[in-house]
Each structure stands twice: as structure tokens, then as C-alpha cells.
Image 1 (tube, helix red, strand yellow):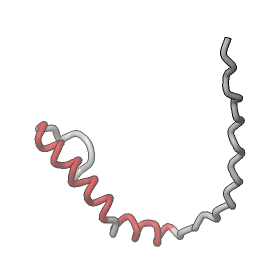
Image 2 (cartoon, rainbow, N blue to C red):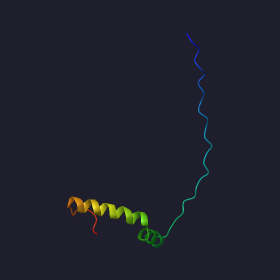
Image 3 (cartoon, rainbow, N blue to C red):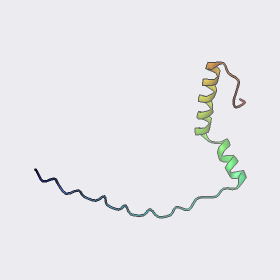
Image 4 (tube, helix red, strand yellow):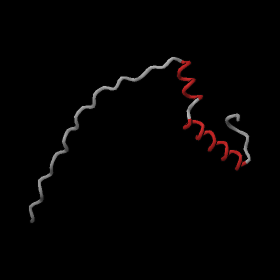
Length: 61
């Protein structure tokens, strides 16, 4: 029987440094949402799909 190659153990990954989460006030968070291009694009796609299907269920817009 042929010898198999030794199985190497996976190396331990270095621990990632803790990232401190940024805290926003409710007003700051709302301003970010109101000015979000990503959110606008998502809502546009949603509305296009809803209109293509002819449904009125879901978010108002």
C-alpha cells in the first residue's frame, strides 16, 4: 500500500482586533437613511417590481 502524504493541520488565524462600533444619535441615523443612495436604489427596484406585478401591497411610495 502506498504511503499517503501527512495531513497538515490548519493554521490558526490571528485574532482580529476588536472594532469599536460607531454610535449615532437617532437624528444622525435618520439623516443617513434619508440620504442613502443604496436605500434609494433598493426602493426603486422594489417599486419597479411591485408595479410590474400590479400589486399595491407593501411599502407606500
